[in-house]
Length: 171
Ligand code: S3P
Image (cartoon, rainbow, N blue to C red; front, side, top):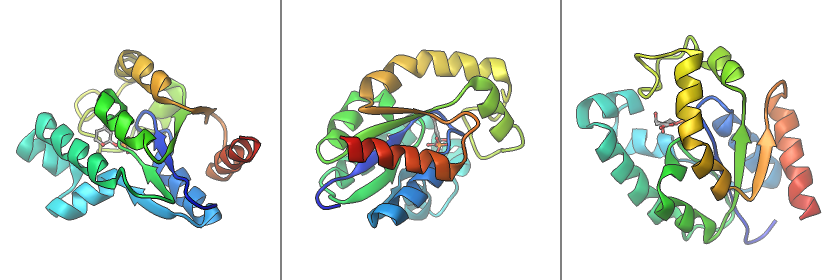
């Protein structure tokens, strides 16, 4: 697949990183994970980054990073869950990528993340209600950014990846 790219967006715990990995392998495209790049650039976890520098600085670094990779061709980009909150990020991603939104219910997100302590946004409030509230606040920005929307509830990473490939092939 030449001269195309895909950016996966959506709430934390919807499987963006795992799906991006499998999709990039199956389509033979480069894998880029925005959180991984930030972690390796600053040599610290996202949680450490939030405690040390705060969310505002994180969003600035995230935005600069998206701008830097916006000219890349032939990649699958796993975006952090807050990337679509900034319109410039979406404009930049759309230059060379189709945007794929992964959706999941608040209950299944909670189920996947309840023992996870790597998400600073949910750290002190890991419960279904908080997930529902943040998801509702972000819903519009996720939906309006997406070219393709995939529901992930009760599906394996492999099934989600194949569904995406099926939709890409259909055009
Ligand atoms: C965030 C999601 C995280 C990470 C950071 C902020 C968010 O990425 O970028 O903790 O605001 O939704 P994942 O969606 O990969 O967990």
